[in-house]
Length: 145
Image (cartoon, rainbow, N blue to C red; front, side, top):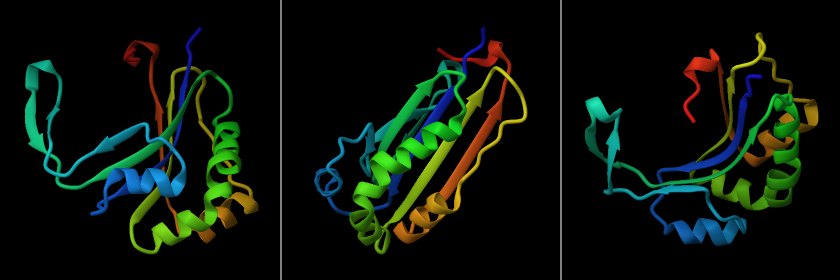
C-alpha cells in the first residue's frame, strides 16, 4: 500500500531577531531554523552546489505519514497551534513574513482536495498569515524515504 505524506507548517522568514525570541514568544520549539550567512548544500550528490543563506528562517512543522485526509491535519493544526497563539502570531505578522503552509505528497489516490471552512479562513486572516499550498501527486517510485 502506498502511503502519503501530509505536512502542515507555520513558517517565519526574513527577520533580524534571534531565533529563540520567536521560539519564546510562540512557546513552540522549531522543527527547523536557518541562520542568515550559514552555508548549505543545494542539489543531489552528483550536482552539489554550495550556497549561503540570505535570510533567517524559523519553522514549526507537523508531519503525518498516512492516507488520512489532509484536511484533518490542517484543522488540528489550526485548533492546536494557531488559535492558542492568535494574538502573538498577529503581532509578529504585522512586522514579519509569516506563512501557513500545507504540503501533500500523494502516492495513493488522485485528485487531492483541500477544504477550509469559514472559521479556518477567518482565523488565518485575523492572524495576518499568508497561505501557501503545495500538492504533489506522485508515483510510489518517486517516494524518497
